[in-house]
Length: 325
Image 1 (cartoon, rainbow, N blue to C red):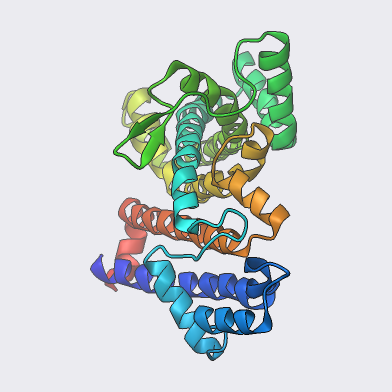
Image 2 (cartoon, one colour):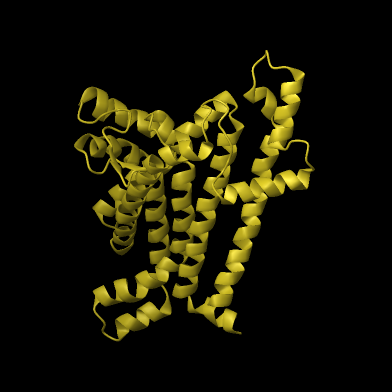
């Protein structure tokens, strides 16, 4: 187990160094940092001094090493537009994105897995067919269109829910803001979280259904039924456990994408998270924010994949046997 985690940790470090190289290349080759930080009336001497101060005259490998060391300490430089440390801007927006992704993940897993199991066990029922038909909507429609339709129905026509923003938030711990503790914050969270969760929910549901149907046809499930075990034990103790092995892998990747692809949902609902900050940074060619976002999203993916691999290792005895051999 320890060697397995160690190997995954080494692979994760290689991935993060590669992503850091891509992010650093944005600094190096996309635009001129000095031009982005000074005005037109800046003299050549002042430009040269700033170039030396930023270390742009150093060799490539030295600059890259400095970028990696600073990134490990959470230092991604200063935003060209806001003239503030990027780490402060990211921290201000981080809570909004993580809360939105957390609620979306709960919705996707809490509804997707039970619906997938139900449609597999009652595959010919009218309700199962209706759920499968509705799931096509979630898979087929683009996220921005789902968001606009929800805004039109619940925000404009029915006027039940706010259509943009995060509502009132409460400052906790001095550095984290949350909308979980206010009514307007919870209301503001409903439409974006449903929009973000819908695709993942239907994907997980269809995946669980397909795996469950496959497992129900296997011999060990037939033997379990022949032994006279009750259906509940056969379905949830034997079949569902074996269904979860591939589902864990796909679900982990999808949960990572909830954070990475919250950009569209945050743009539609003007949700003040990291995704919206990244979109605004693209418009302003704010390279430090773009690079920080790229590294941070890669870090989330690496951590989630490591957790998924460890869960996969714990659930599937074949991996443990291969590792021991």
